[in-house]
Length: 289
Image (cartoon, rainbow, N blue to C red; front, top):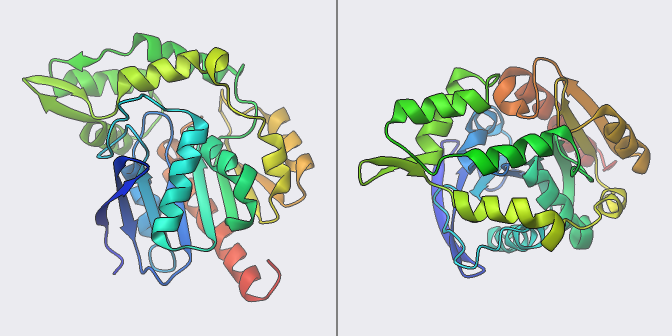
């Protein structure tokens, strides 16, 4: 029961793909990937947790093997609605959630109206008020300059390495394998690169993310903020404010990691996440959480 399973379900008018590891009877952890990623990016973490958690990693709309949105609705409130629909489909009353970057924003957006459904929340280099950071500026520049096609897989691999210089070789190979595909002798993106890019570039002026500080303060569950020590996206001052906003928030820095913590230093990331979740489960079992 601990091996990877591939699943499809119709949610909010789109065909969604999600991966699972572990026994459905175990505590559920839903892992939400970042802006141009995919569910399988968390496979390494899932394999370390599958003996004691039911790990669910969806391809969010427009990514991986999930449908692209014909209306190009790639905004936080829609992602949050998708998360709620997935949770309902899975029949979960409460869930543990891990969100990287955009995935963390989507989790907090869902928490604005469903804070009671969280057993814990892990924010991987993510939090309220990301706009204005150097990391956001870097990501927006990447979106504006990313080619839509490549002639060869080696070109695609070189592009990924040029914008992710610090991630492991395994992470680069995963991105090439799961974010690219071959169509008509060209290498193209699996995700809706154009639609996602247009939404993110225009988001600040058209449909900005909601104020997520109240969502963070409303959570009664344990919250872990994982910051890459070299992150250009989540600064220490914002992490400090997150801890001050809610006494259930604890923060940890992962050395030798930037914004892409699980790809930069997977060993420390997996260990820290596992230790946090084990502690949460232990406290809940003892009646303290």
